[in-house]
Length: 324
Image 1 (cartoon, rainbow, N blue to C red):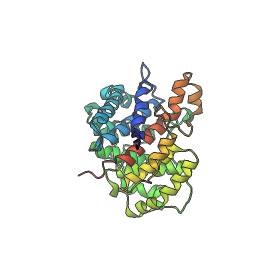
Image 2 (image 1 turned 135 degrees about the horizontal axis):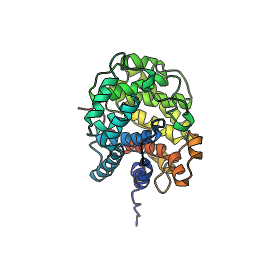
Image 3 (image 1 turned 60 degrees about the horizontal axis):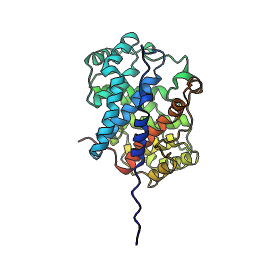
């Protein structure tokens, strides 16, 4: 008699279980926020972003939609339903807070005072260096490790955020994209981590995480279609599932099929509890300052688990694609 093996849960579903089990580590510490350390807010925004991209898809099953919505609600509650953004922007008018807030508007949460403050920051001639967080202690803040085009990449994120909020801004995709590494389509066979993170986020921002594949020009889409699989193979061999997952999502964002083994690669690496192992946390100082071993484990692996959730979802369910 033929034995039918039970269907194994998806990587993204098991990854959500790990995130849910560690939801307490997304909770902000009590007391007033540390205005010089936006990293805890960045972690919350990353959780909200993954949730936002997943709930766009009409193919997200109802039960999983409830789970994802609960996680996005957790993040919104940690931002005090928008009041924390107002507090932070009043004390330190950092425009990067707009990239975080805009995610919640896409999820249906609106805070009018925050919108008003952000609208005042983005007009022509209103952006200055004082509107960006200080870089005095990068080893603690663990900023995104973009390449030499990092300023243009971050500004593309601002352009997307203000467009999503329907607010006028001084950031133009047309003016910023030519400043990026990807726009030049270098004939390289390997990527540095900085180049790779810049590339993936340029694609995320230009395509609105797959909603507008045509937001990236045809030449760059062809370049990525030809080169991403080989880059992904190298990253798999190097056990860097963080960038492997982001490049898989890049292919989905430009409307290209993912390599057939993406789900299997992630499944083989996934721990029994749903965690996907990270390549190493960038802020050794933050790890050393963290006494709780479970929290250190969270810091080292939460981002790769989130990235793997999105890549697995793109491979097995599919991103929402172009908005009708």
